[in-house]
Image (tube, rainbow, N blue to C red):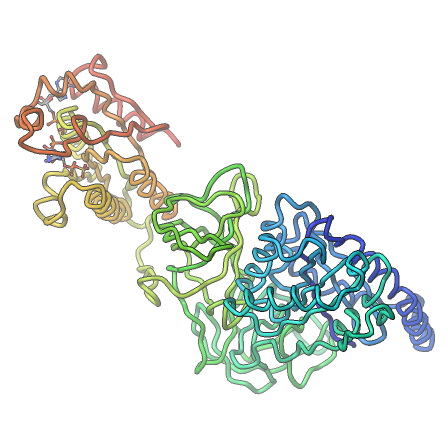
Length: 611
Ligand SMILES: Nc1ncnc2c1ncn2[C@@H]1O[C@H](COP(=O)(O)OS(=O)(=O)O)[C@@H](OP(=O)(O)O)[C@H]1O
Ligand SMILES: Nc1ncnc2c1ncn2[C@@H]1O[C@H](COP(=O)(O)OP(=O)(O)O)[C@@H](O)[C@H]1O
């Protein structure tokens, strides 16, 4: 089988991308027809009725399963030397999105420029994206040479300019081809009008470019896609099917299965037609058989005991945000798809946003909008087994999916394991069901003096009285212990809320109702706590104690408002620091709702309702 080359294209319609693709398909068709005839002949000789072209499309199955082919039309063509898949990304307004989705598995990127217009900002963006995605080979197609009189000077000028920019990026192999997609010169055949050009035609380059060594052949990685079980004449067959993501596997190899960490040996490897293989390497689709009766399933990873990937629930990654419906913000939750594994992921922080034309980092950025790229940190519900994207594109890439709509909202490349690398939540032998009581977090937020603590005390009293363990986590009390040393700056309040949220989560996990009473004035901080609970599958009830400021101020139990008004303390919530009211709390309490006991009962009736 001739080797497959995956090509990503970048450039707008005006640059001649469609013409170029059309030209490649059309002019190579003659070659393809010859090959088709050969395939048909061989198939006939073997007694097969239909020519077997399945291999041409095989490699795409995994991508379809990953759901990353949206908006990208794949076109196939072949010459006697090679098969090609071009990810044709139509439309130029969403080019970043389209390129990222189309290029994540590409071997080579074609960037088109119009010889008259030269290197535009967009060309630089495309080159940057190609380097970010670690596409190993880049070809700058200087198109429309017919419109600049086949000028060698113009071509040299553009080559020098683009070369200078590419030097700042991590581009390993860069080729320049002057061409006219319209006349076909230098696309499939060498063009007579440019005798000064010493290189080959684009198609010739595509046929010759060496890609086998681009794959990682060192780190053996086999993500299990599905399990094959069947009764055969020779006995019960159990095999694990998937695509080799790295390294070389052979029968007899000692391997380790993650997450169970079981050690075993490969007993056999077979190819797509069931034929036994002496070795398997990326990107082959194979079935692996292991010694022994093992509990291995989809999403598990087979590797070598002495060369293991990172195992972590914390990930630092570069992501490109792909939707205009929402923005990527900290505290939001998605489904992450990584190799054959899916789990939930919480966006913990946006570290910075990258301006991809100036390569400037904006560390103040708090969100990523459509087409924007930035560095984020994620926490996943289940541990992932991964490598840095630089080291392995297959085990270092992922996508984020919106749980409700099923839409792909981000494509990401893993930079490194996050802060608590290789620390994984240790499940204990006692499950939540075993504990007998159902935990939850009730989160009371509101101004100082709004009545949070008073109502929280009543909630705790009522619950404990009814036999349900409950514990009041009061802001003041926490600030005397676990939160000692934190003040009232935005960063300190965020940390105060985060720690209280983590402690509440532990109580809830233990089967206790954590009743938290904290001003928690900022929406984003509360959203993170809510998302962390949802990620852990624990109920979270947000109660907004909506007592108007004048009432709180008239109560002023500790005389704090008086001090703040007198300027003796600054940054006091409601006076000179903002309180951001919750958008969609489970419950809002107003002063007219009654006394604290009545309010507590209202909260509890909410706790019992299914959410
Ligand atoms: N600058 C400033 N702003 C707001 N509150 C202040 C401030 N300085 C001290 N205090 C007292 O600290 C109590 C609020 O602590 P919290 O931990 O709930 O605040 S926060 O959630 O971190 O915003 C709060 O107590 P309660 O009145 O019991 O809510 C305040 O009296
Ligand atoms: N539902 C209520 N009706 C009337 N007064 C209330 C109510 N809830 C609380 N209070 C009074 O308001 C004051 C401040 O309440 P507190 O619980 O300390 O507020 P926070 O914890 O929000 O700062 C207390 O004196 C309390 O008696």
